[in-house]
Amino acid sequence: MKGVIKSYLPSKEYGYIVGDDGKNYFFRARSVRTDPQMIADGYPVHFEEKANPNGYEALSVFCEIPTNVSAIMYEVPERFHIYRDWVKDGMEVLEESSWEICGSTTISGESPEDAKDDMIARAKQLGANAIVHSRYNKGVGREGSYRFRTHHFVGVPVVVAKRTHGGQYTKEQLVPIIDVQAELYKQEAKRKNKISLILRLLIYALLIPCTVLGLAALYKQLIITKFIVVTCSLFLINLAIFAWLLPKTDHGWWLQKR
Image (cartoon, rainbow, N blue to C red; front, side):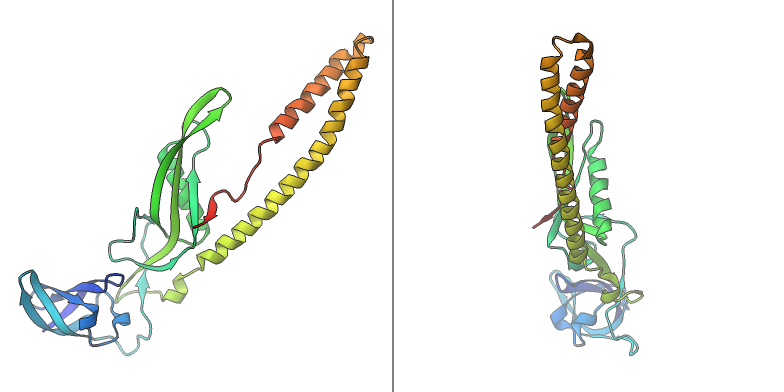
């Protein structure tokens, strides 16, 4: 009997064929007589049909792959996909990163969707078009004395595509080497963190003597009262800047090894 491959899941190594009689036939990769690695949706096939208690099965499947096709062809999804566990809908993972990315809200009023959008944007920076093993958790943030809920999404960036007869891309054209991009971003983050640390130390080196001089001047100006206000102001400004610079910034916080 002749038919067309309706769907095939490479990760599960099985799929379905629509026969010329309109029935759906289940088949496994081991039943394919041609190269199973070349199986894709939409290819015409001929096979031996068999009925079993669960439905219909195709045996001795021969896939009619055009002679001008030398590689598996893929089509990419139109929208970004997020999966809690693993890919579905006949998608195939062409590249899985060894890094995890995080999307987070940092100010009051932001929602879980904002955190999810942040994660998606960071994944796209690495060249991914999907996230697997996605998970969500909540935390607590603070603005002065006000506490608020924060939202965090974590997942593994991947490149997914679907094998199809009418695909326009090969695997080599779609895989952007996510881990290479991640390493570059991490190295850039380390460079920025190092620069920030050096700047902080330089500022501290300036602030501490200024504060000491301000205290000394304040002690002396207790007698000469006309300079007390200016000295106190300088001291408070130095103290405020010191406190503002105290929190550390990690530019690569959103990217962590699995």
